Length: 269
Image (tube, rainbow, N blue to C red):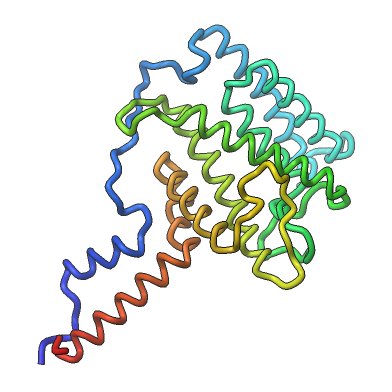
């Protein structure tokens, strides 16, 4: 009887089945000589915009230090975060094609309202899930914020994604793409986990396509976003891509088991 062990070729095929990142894909081309943002090519303007953005980000980091009791509390953390969201909104309004500001506004809104923002019903936090700064927000406020978050992340991705896989981008653009994909993947992933509980439902603006998604849709899109986040440089997102995709995992497990049985029986039908 032939050995029940799988050949290297078999294992290679199985890894391709279960790993959503194993498909053919050109590597990301980074070019330090091109503008850091494809939509702000004037270096003086870029420096001005990033200086404003850094000041806002610094204020949010300061709030986190206050929350962690590492600095004296100046004022209500929620009020300070909402002011940062407002300032990022002004930056987006003035420079609508600056993707980084959209990505950071989405992150600030996630901190304010939490990653359960798309789900209504069961309010129990998942393990290691951050507690939102505003736990008393109305459904309308949550729906409006979730629309802005998803629109900002989709917009940032659209603004920076190269027209072809062979077009070079800057390291700054790659970093923002990685963050935007990973953020959206995290929201989709946690939404799927919360939706799998009893007495839950979606709370999404009807203009968004996610309104009609099932738990599996959220899981699969989370996996794709984590895959892209990994492709643009986030190693944690790359690792999450497979674990977030139950279809890929199940497929790999089923095929691996089928091949084990076939080899164990000598491969005779």
